[in-house]
Length: 153
Image (tube, rainbow, N blue to C red; front, top):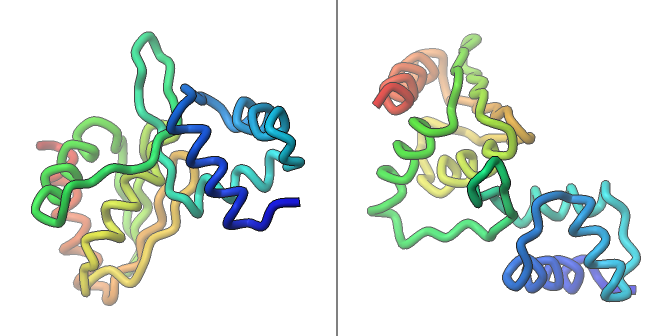
């Protein structure tokens, strides 16, 4: 039985060499390598590794490690992701909910986390929803306006 770190390293190796579109495919590939794993475990690993789903064309996607070239490109990349994948943003007090295209929430949340902003306490991402906690109500309002501008271009 592999440790969690070993299993996650194996996942990274698999997605580096294979076009894996679904969690089910990843489970099957791991099991073919002799790793006994459930889809629930793979789902947690995908979130922890912050894998993103990249479009391959014709409505197909594949998992990939997020690749970023440094902080100077983060804001431009975030703007691109907001324009392409964010559908809606809502706020209640100091909490924001960002709705994305399916499979893109973790990639957007990863960039928000990497910005290390003082006005954002943290993020939680699902498949198509990101929960963002702002430090205050006022900062939540400012972040909402900023994110709307990013979304609209």
